Length: 106
Image (cartoon, rainbow, N blue to C red; front, side, top):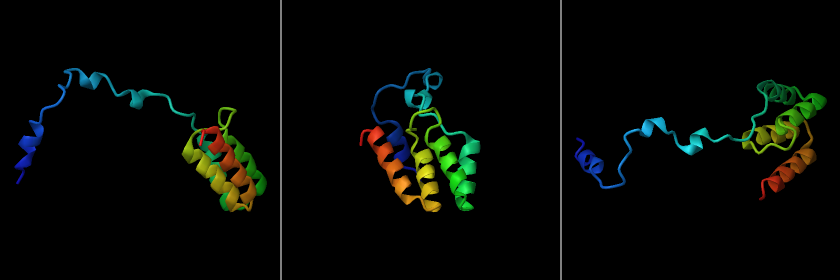
């Protein structure tokens, strides 16, 4: 039984504009960091899984810096760091993670 639903719907608050559906929130339309190319991302995962060190290192560069500089995309950076760790390049993975943290201002 929904007794509280009408009471919740009648709570006072700011009025909702009639054209609310035409103006999406700014966060929904704001440009985020550039995403890595899907092919490089998939290649990184496959190369790391197969322990191909050179291919993993090259794909890591493409995923971690899709626009030339270090990406701010946390999922892409996680994938890059994880790929390096999987092929035995843990020290390089640490360096990449620290560099990304410093670039993000942490």
